[in-house]
Length: 574
Image (cartoon, rainbow, N blue to C red; front, side):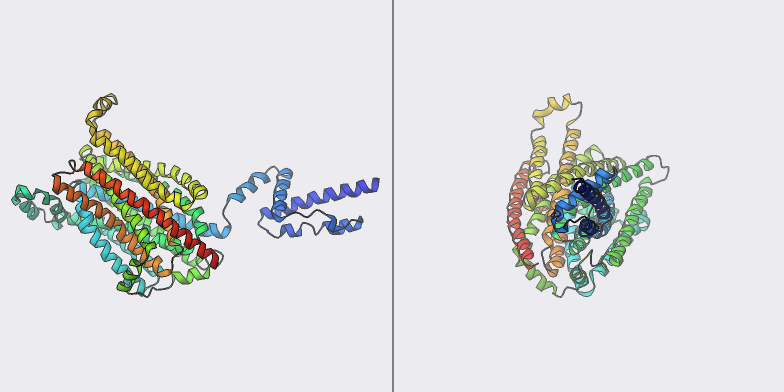
């Protein structure tokens, strides 16, 4: 009758108002709003002789969905806002990942400038060239990395991770500032140029290959800068930042956010590349006696400023994030303040006995060897195309910007790969990419003669084509490394204990990375002494590259099995 229709109409109107109120409260972050949704309706239902129990009960997820739909229907602005809020991380996670992403941005900004500058210094130095790089990586970088790892183990036993992070980053900032403003302007007085020139002139023809290692002595301050720039990548990027991120991040969070960290970081590649090109442009119009000295001060000023921002963000996280139990569990905070207890010998024995650490080290070493084999051949072509330091630096700036742009795309693809195919598939992408691009690059070098008509039709020279193809190979390889290889490697540390996270990571990242590059360098040196030149050794190096990638793929599959088991064990304990 009429009374029944009026009661039904009143019930429907009231229920829709409650739905809208519930949606508004949900958008404001009140999780308990759904529980309150029925409260105003019950008295009204009783007044009309209806039982509240007769009202439809919805599952929480369905109720939330209906609430959002009601809000969208009642307010045209509510729908998009609700979708945006649903995609945002929870406030506690956002408070944590935002400063972490900003730290990674500025660390990579500085590293890109250092990476481009170190190559310019050593490759274009007097009496030097791309041939010096294998000797630098073997006889300077590797001993420096081993010495640092021993020093880092000692620091970890004496100080907290917060103190170690702050002290090491401050040391790097002080060195790069000192180099630009004090050491480089006095390089002529510090370098034993005349003495080394006399030794080189006295060398018999059979020992002409020693001119490359002697160039390290001739330009020893540049060699120290090269080593410190390499250590920034191994220590600050791989060891300090990722070690800190792994302590405060869960695996499920890492799968969501580690690929996205690279988005911001590779925006840093673009900006740092633009900054390097901007400084190169200023150098072209400079009237100073040594324009490169002025550029070096600007470049190292950018590195120092970025380092100071990293320290400020780290201190913010210590005060605002690490003290918030919603952001970081108390157990993780306790672990970050814990000093490791094993001595150097005990740590070495512990790490050597772990197949998990060995597989991680194999991944890092194989990457270093693979990229070094291809990169040195490319840089030899690059110096021939751009013998002037300014032109070389400008090209490297453009190279870094392109790497950042391509990596942005790879990061978006990487998140999908992690989500749809898992850790194991993501870990196989980088070696596969290196195999394909390396095969194309070496094919161009080995069979370039038969491609002469094509090169002429493109309106370029074989040298410039080799430079462009080599640059494309490096861009694709590095973008897959940044977007997939690095996140995979860092996720693999999360289930480990404090000793393995700290000293295992130091051994793998600080020693493994230069050891891989030194291994590639030793192969190149052996080939050069055996067949007479880097160009003549190209087919043998291509064969070595494919063998190394095969070992890499096998280690990645083995580590995937162990990582999956470790995550299942951690989930069972939780």
